[in-house]
Image (cartoon, rainbow, N blue to C red):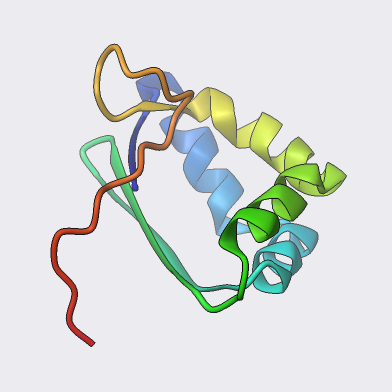
Length: 102
């Protein structure tokens, strides 16, 4: 998935991710996400993770319902904007997988 940083919020976003809240990291793990990495280049954010659970939609709903994760998203969301101008997404946009090799 990809997003762009709000230029004036770049330092804040990087600061937040230097010390992600432990509960947020635990919730990510509990929701079946592993190997979660965010890259940044010239204000472009690229994120990648592997899902190892059984019901992605249910795990995503559980994560979204977690009050601490909601507070984390409230902190990070103002730092991000959609990758494409005019996108209906609030920030992160999902890529369509076109090729994969294990």
